[in-house]
Length: 310
Image (cartoon, rainbow, N blue to C red):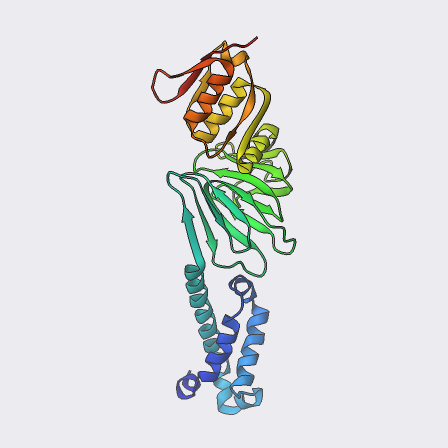
């Protein structure tokens, strides 16, 4: 300790700063015993300390000097990591409208209402990692060397390059639906269950129930169709049952839309643009099927009634 107090530590600071320039993710994994010894040896060489210099009276202080140097280095690295993590992280949140953003790697995220995503200003050398709260559709740029990881409170999703929808709301079922490509979904560590990891391909989904802590594989052909058309900007129907059309409208606009017994037998040919409002879409249905649209009893949603259907 007397040596540290009595000597210029500028060289020690220089060496430490060189290590601090490493990527923040890498820094977290390099502070093991073996590397610490190598770093300490490098420090000794840079500031002119040789093993022989510890003979005699300095030999009594060798362990103290080494310990002090390592403590200084580790303390500085810890402070640097905390500072970097705080500076790098960005949070993008939505309130009453859907929004689209581009991540540092060029991947695109379509964030649903009342959702948020946390991501760094730039991705590290190993993984591309973000944190999701709520629901979002992801279009991930392919990069086999840098997997894309989406963390959440219930599940984690790992991808290389694909398009999929992920929905996570605290206390509710979490769901991942793959439109194209392949993803891996696993439960958070410390959550024991029979199936802790699933690999999904197109038109498949992983559903996690926090109550039972069970992760299940399900067919998601209809969900994948919905998300694909939603992202294309247009819903297209070629003789689909009107009940299916109403379900899509309800899901997209977050407003109750149902059919009565007669209109449910109708089949609809037509399309809607996602930029259209709900009233315009309902008016098109009513006109094409000679049906009527009325408010439900709670005055919160719509009912499609009647219709000239065979």
